[in-house]
Image 1 (cartoon, protein in one colour):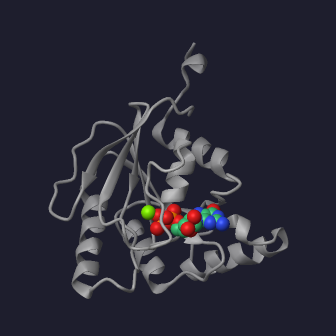
Image 2 (cartoon, helix red, strand yellow; image 1 turned 180 degrees about the vertical axis):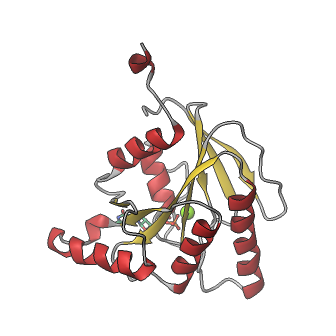
Length: 202
Ligand SMILES: Nc1nc2c(ncn2[C@@H]2O[C@H](COP(=O)(O)OP(=O)(O)O)[C@@H](O)[C@H]2O)c(=O)[nH]1
Ligand SMILES: [Mg+2]
């Protein structure tokens, strides 16, 4: 999809109701600091609409970005930030689970994993929640530029084995620095939401 306009349309806090959207949604989950805001900015061609930070744990809301009045990218709260109290963590977990459960327009969930690290217990739990809600998570291995090319295959194997992915699961390496992986992610999202460009409709 060619980005024409993007807008942060809805911000949902812990007590807000999930909007009953009419356009297809694609959600992004991952632990704090994994590069979720950077990925979303990269997909929208914006430097900073989704807030990026080297201070993790800031996004405590579910943010709905309207893309071209055709779909939403949904930024879920980052999990696993140590400095947050147990009760806060529980609330975030509930918020994410509730969204996965109630959204009628959710077409797919992308789960972000740092390509350099073995998936954590929280990553595994998130993966299982997504599967439990009936979705096949698509894995984005973030911060690809931080590895040498020769290190990538082994790193991807660690991610796949750590999450015990089903053999046919899509794993896309991505770098917010080089934008490698961006076109592949958009091609997949277009397919997931059934998007056909105007010029191909004729
Ligand atoms: N080198 C590199 N740094 C990244 C990449 N993606 C994110 N970062 C950095 O990692 C930190 C956290 O990124 P952010 O997008 O805010 O993560 P979030 O907490 O998951 O939303 C920031 O300092 C980013 O600049 C990437 O692909 N490559
Ligand atoms: Mg963020």
